[in-house]
Structures are given as structure tokens and as C-alpha cells.
Amino acid sequence: MRSSSILSVAALLPFAYAQLNDLAKAAGLTYFGSATDNGELTDTEYTSILSNTSEFGQITPGNTQKWEYTEATEGTFDYTKGDVITSFAANNSQLVRCHNLIWYSQLPSWVSSGTWTNATLIAAMKAHIQSEVTHYKGQCYAWDVVNEAFDDSGNYRTSVFYEIIGPEYIPIAFETAALYDSNVKLYYNDYNIEYAGVKATAALNLVKDLKARGIQIDGVGMQGHFIVGSTPSLATQSANLKTFIDAGVEVAYTELDIRFSSLPPTSTGLTTQSSDYVNTVQACLDNMPGCVGVTIWDYTDKYSWVPSTFSGAGDACLWYANFTHHPAYDAVTSVLASYSGSGTAAVATAAATTAASSASSVAVVATTLATSVKSSVVASSSVAAVKTSATSAAQVATSATSIAVASTLATVKSSVAASSPVAAVKPTSATSIAIASTLATVKSSVAASSSVAAVKTSATSAAQVATSATSVAVAPSSSATAAPSPADDECDA
Ligand SMILES: *[C@@H]1O[C@H](CO)[C@@H](O)[C@H](O)[C@H]1NC(C)=O
Ligand SMILES: *[C@@H]1O[C@H](CO)[C@@H](O)[C@H](O)[C@H]1NC(C)=O
Ligand SMILES: *[C@@H]1O[C@H](CO)[C@@H](O)[C@H](O)[C@H]1NC(C)=O
Ligand SMILES: *[C@@H]1O[C@H](CO)[C@@H](O)[C@H](O)[C@H]1NC(C)=O
Image (cartoon, rainbow, N blue to C red; front, top):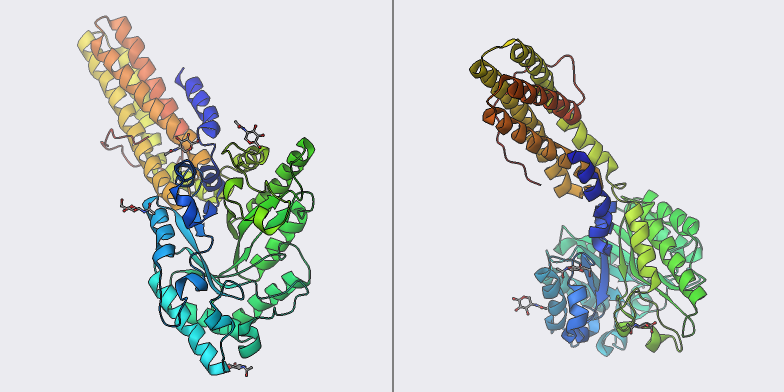
């Protein structure tokens, strides 16, 4: 029976799609991504994985869209290096989280040590945002408009912007960014806001304040630079994401890495790192669709920022420096796989309901015709009469099934295009396709038969297959009356 081999194929699907971005999308996230940087792109072993969209559907330029690169001299804009990253992403059809517009760090000295008045610094800030957002218009999924504006006590962090302009620099930055790309998501991005506390409250109040004033803010990025063994729990992170989502923004983990404070890691440490990664990724999965994705802050220890920033620390990524996986990679793919289809279950259910409803009229009529053809076949005595009846039975079955399959596939296709409910829809379409193929075989064996008994047997099978095909494809509706009509045999797998 075909159905057993279909089940085996379905059981293999999780292994066939066992990479981060494929699994994240099947679960209902928009992407799984990685930060990168220009110097690494000459490493072909590195780029072969970074460009693999089964692993990464999104890229963040780690440095080269920052102010010190893009406007090192006042009024002279240079996007050469940032463009290399967006070009890499475009070549691979990957989303880009553009990063960042206003941050206290990595500023050219003409900004950080300039002589400013409130008005001149606002003008410089607006000119920078206007140029950069305009340059990258249409290329960014999101912009980190303001990065790290609060200190760990929840107060505004000291910066040239805060000192000269005051807290208004943040709303001004968001309002300005909104003017130059109406389709990009505008994010506030920070660390130590992944759990409830004074800093998360400060970020939340910023969101509420901007929204209350009608200023566009679409998302909050939780950076997620964690330490093995002190990563916030699943419950803590999940509740925190929900608090932000309830304030009317989407959320994402934007810079996830989980470092060991000292090296080398023990095997117990690696197990802890796995569960720490799972806590974070699962917190996002538990908050779909408000949580849209997870970005790791580069994928391999070979290019991690950790060792040069935190002395003695490292091994924070999902791949080791030699491009083999940390155990945490398998833990992350497992948790993503376990959520397959869940983020879009409602979409898949709606697709199935629509398909069933449009096919149900066909099913009822086809079942009736198949039954009457079956009795006329059983009552026939000449080979020619039986062959004619049997062929009609098979044709009715084929067209009923094609209509059901075509209808299911069309609906499934658009729902897949919209949201990738792979796990939910594959079994349905696979079954319909298998039934259509079985009917075609029955039909040719009827046409090839020469004895009445053989033809009767084949015709009876055809009628039975027709009945079961339609009952599998749909839940029959007693009110449906439309007649079956010829349909294409086309079945897109
Ligand atoms: C992506 O990576 C997976 C896992 O290593 C591999 O099976 C697949 O062939 C890669 N795809 C491409 C296009 O290289
Ligand atoms: C993207 O593709 C173009 C055309 O093939 C190529 O010239 C360019 O170097 C690629 N960009 C990157 C960053 O690989
Ligand atoms: C700077 O100017 C802006 C815009 O007029 C204003 O909202 C803000 O309060 C001013 N800052 C200071 C420190 O005066
Ligand atoms: C890769 O690096 C890791 C971590 O140092 C090590 O445990 C592993 O044995 C290495 N694998 C290979 C194939 O070199």
C-alpha cells in the first residue's frame, strides 16, 4: 500500500530539513540569522555556511553600517563596506537587519568630540539618518535606530547625544528614520533587557512613550549576550518577551551568543550551554508571532567578538572555530524541530478547511456516480459494456481526485508562500498525489483487461479507490450538489 511508504517519507522530513533557518521557518519564525563582518568574507569555508539559506535566512552587518564607517568625515558618506554585506545577503536572498543608526560607541571623533549646540547636533544626527536610511531603502528588514541608550541602572546612558540634546534625541531619531523608508521595521536594541528589571522597564517605558506620542517604533531587539550558567530561564525570558509584545511591538533576539567565562569548556559546561541556548530560542518560539527571529552574533568561534572583549572567555557560538558543531547546535535544531508547524497551525488549518469545502461537492457526486457505475459493471455481461462502465468509473475518480488535489495544492501553495506550514501540509498533499497515481494505474489495468471477471475486479477497485480518494481528500458534505468537471492532471509536489 502506498500510504506506508508515504508515512516513511514524512517521518524522514525532519532530518531532511535539519538546518537552523529551515527549521525556524517551519516552526513559524521569520528567520534564523547570523551577524557577519567584511574581513571574514574572504574565508570560503566560512562563507559556504553563511550563504546557506537552510542555515541562515538573515544577516546583520556587525560593524560596517556604523557611523564611524559610513560618515567618518562630516557630510561625506561612504557605504562601500556596508554594501558588501547587503550585496552578500541579496545574492543569497537573505534578509538584513541593518545595524545601527544612533549609538554612543564607534562614533567618529568629529561627532563624539565635536563642539555642538542642541540645534547643530540634531541637524547632524538627522542628516546622518536621512543619508543612511535612504541609501539602504528597500534592503533592510529592520533598522536598529537607537542602540543601547540605557545603562544597567535604567538611566539614560551618558553619550554626546544625551548630553547635548537630552532624552529627546531618541524620539527625534525614530521620527527621522520613519521619513526615509516607510517599509522598514524600526527597532530599539539593547542588552540586559532580556529579563524583567530596571533596564527592561526603561526600554518598555520608551516603547510606551513613543507609541503614546504616535512615533513609529516596530520592534525591540534583545541582544542576548549571555554567560553559560547565568542565562535567564525560559520562564523569565518568555514572560519578558510577552511584556514587550503586549506593549505593541515585535521582538527578536538580535545578537545571541552564550560564552564560557574560562576555557576550555567541560562536558557539563557544554550541556549547560545547550540548555541555555534552548531557553532563549524556546522563549522566542513560545511568543510567536510576536517574536520573529533569532540572530546569533556570528556563528563560529573563529570570528566571535568574545575573546577580544572578555579576557579568557570564549566558545560562545554554535560552531567551533574548526567549523564543527557545538552540542548546542543540535539542541537548538531539536527545539526548533519540535515546534514545526506550530507557529502557523491556524493558517494550515484554515487552508485545509478551504480545500475540503471546495472539494466536498465533487466528493459527494463522485461517490454517487462511482456507486452507480459499480452496480452497472456488476450487472453487465459483455466485455465492451463493462470496459466502458469501468473506464467511466476510473475517469470520475480521476477527475474528482484531480479537482480535490488541485484545490488542495492551490490553497496549500498560497499558505506555504505566506508562512511555510510544511509539516502540516505535506502529509495532505502527499496522500492526494498518491491516490491520483493509484487511480491512473487502475484505469490502465481496466483498459488492458480482456476477461469480464478481470475487468469487473478492476472496475470495483476503481470505484473503491474513487470512494476512498474523495473521503480522504474531504469530509463529505450532504448539502453539496455540484457536478464534477474535467480538471488538469497537474500535481505539483
Ligand atoms: C546547506 O547545508 C546543509 C547541511 O550541511 C547541506 O546539506 C546542504 O547541501 C547545504 N546547501 C547548500 C545549497 O549548500
Ligand atoms: C554578489 O553577486 C555579484 C554578481 O555575481 C558579485 O559581483 C558580487 O561580488 C557578489 N557580492 C558578494 C558580497 O559576494
Ligand atoms: C533640544 O531641542 C529639542 C528640539 O527642539 C528639544 O526637544 C530638546 O529638549 C532640546 N534639548 C535641550 C537640552 O534643550
Ligand atoms: C574541533 O574543535 C573542537 C573544540 O576545540 C574539538 O573538540 C574537536 O575535536 C575539533 N574537531 C575536529 C574535527 O578537529
